[in-house]
Image (cartoon, rainbow, N blue to C red; front, side, top):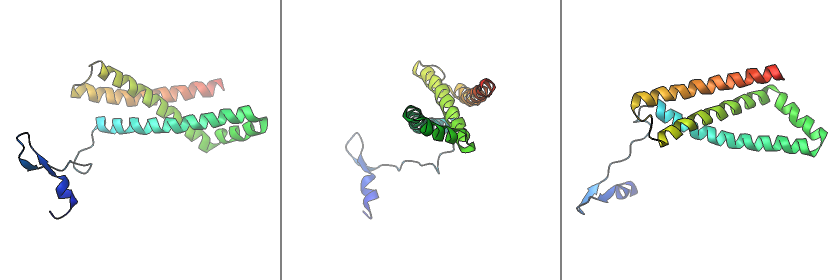
Length: 143
């Protein structure tokens, strides 16, 4: 054996004979597909929602602390960067929600055939974008 990777590739088949296990393919081998991209994005948006929840808690803590602390927090939220972060948080929230419904349908046994997976994937993207824009339009009209 030349290095430790060869030792890790050693294995035994069901008959007990020593065999070489294949290396697992990686991202340079696989062609990106919508299902894998949406799965990765679902995980990323879950993490983003966690950070957004922390920011929401800080904003609420500032509101509970003093009028000056709330004014500082509100000025950060009202800035261009704050609006971009809020828009991204809203998009992540609606994406995670819509894709969660898709996963619930999968858990019920629906939508596993490839054409349906592609259709529902694009539907999740469209619904996420549409709900985000609708939410912001309603929010801007009310405020």
